[in-house]
Image (tube, rainbow, N blue to C red; front, side, top):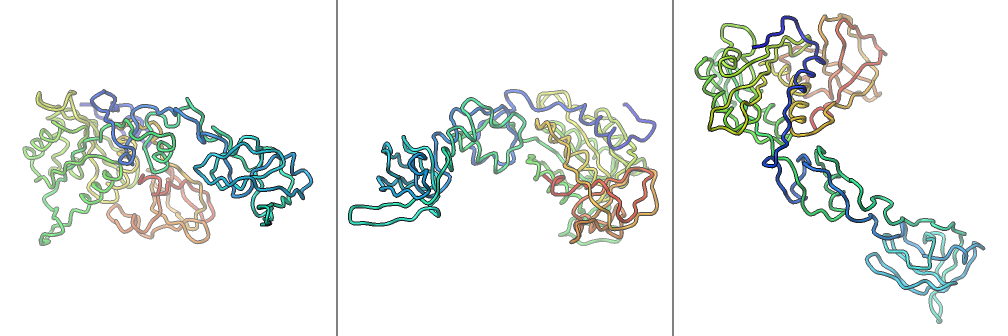
Length: 419
């Protein structure tokens, strides 16, 4: 066992976590699935377009396709020789004529500009439609060029991309009906504490409802994990060791909540030490000081590989939530093959006073107000779960730092941390 004698900073703890990652990368970890079903999955290999997008020059506007030289007077009167809806191919445009054309339709050969219909006036005559073009277009006006968006042979999606709706649309735009993605990360969770009770059970004296189970499962679902929930494990060393052994067999990562401190009833630490190895950290942050990280050995019948990763989160609900966002989220993303795991941060104005500096780095729950500044939740305790429901994110306040109204602070929005 490796034990840190002094507290790590949040940045140091994250560096240690990410340095230990073994990303999914074997052939058995890749599966080909329909593009329609790939939302939230991580791309295993880079995707290259085999065609140009758009495939041919087309119009950005409803209007008239013309030769710019025929309209230099800004009062050209031209016969309408053809009508070209999107999805149809027009004929060669003859000199001195115009083609009625609709958004997305291919530019006919011979035309080099489009004049939007608002700058034209149509005159229906017995001899056919005539159009008055009241604009002198430049060559190329309102034309999307072939390959303007994507060139054939270019990489459109790099490996490690966590696919979202816009990525799926991009893949579909070049004809990719299926995509190679990494399998879902297999995560086991369990919760320790004889005081824990499920919401559908009577609340006995001294008991509390297990909110962490609902929070952590929701966070893991957001990250596209395949979850096995072992529920509430009794506060006993043998029961904790047995659950760790079962969980390690077929999972990449084991996450627990509670039992990682050094009290007489905290059995997770000795159980992990007995079944594998453990780095036990005291992180210089508030909330979320206790965090355990290590590995649990697999038996011969388990998933290939010698061990499953282990992360033990604090039992206090806000501490568990915050440490998951700051440490578990980037660790899981990196395991999934995602390269950029840093959350987006914003610099914002504090519309409050925080007069007492703490020796630890603080993550304060705050809300964006109507004036574009940040308001602070009045109770910043590690058990106040209402603060993360009320808030829009976390203020990353350095150790030893007070905050005055008007100060600029580093803000981590939940909209980024919950992706």
